[in-house]
Length: 278
Image (cartoon, rainbow, N blue to C red; front, side, top):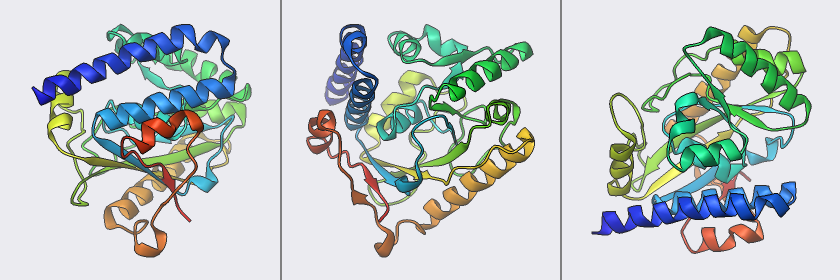
C-alpha cells in the first residue's frame, strides 16, 4: 500500500508539472521558469526518496555552455534539473512516453533518432545554434546508461557543436549513494529493466543521495575528439574522487546553499539538500 501511495504521489506530481508548464510558463519570465523547474525537480527527487548534494558549484556556468554528464538512470535528468534546469538531447522514444515525453518536449528537449546517422548532423547544428544564443544544453556522451560504477567511452559526435560555436563544455559527474554511505546501483536503468521495475527498485531501496560534481569549464578547441577525451577524463577523475570520498572528507563537506524561494517548501519539507563545496 505504501508503494502504491508513493506512486500515486509521483503521478500527481507529474500531472502538476503539466499544469504548471501549460498555465504558468506562458506568463513567466525566463528566471521564473528556471525557479519553477528547479522546485519541481527537487520535489521529484524527494518523492523518490532522494536528496541532492552538489560539489564545486562555484565553477558553474549558466549560459552558452554544453553540459556533459555520465548517465546512469532516467532520474539523472531530474537530478541535473534540480541542480540547474537544462534542456537535454534525448533519444526520440522518450517523446512517446506518457506525460514525461510531453513535459520534455515543452521544456526544450532535442530528440535524436539514433538509428539515423544523418540525424546527428541535424542535432549538432541545432545545438550549436542554441549555444550561440546563450542557452545551456546537456548531453550524455556515453550514449547509453551504465551501473555507474565505471564510465563508458564518450562519443565525440555531439562535441562538434561547442567546437563549431566556440562555446565551452562543462563536465559533471553523478554518483548515487545509499543511507550507509556506499555507492548505490539501485537507480541504474540498464539491461532489460522496464521503467516501472526501475521505479519500484528505487522506491523500495531506501534513502538515496545523488552527488553531482561540477567540473571546471573546458575550452572548445578545434578538435571534437580531443575535447571529448578531455571531458571524459574529467568525469572519470571526478567519479573516482566521489567513490573514494576525496571530495567528501570532513574539510571538504558540502554546505547548504541558498535555495530559491519557490524551492523552500520542496527542499526543507523533504530532506532534499542542495549544497556546494566551501
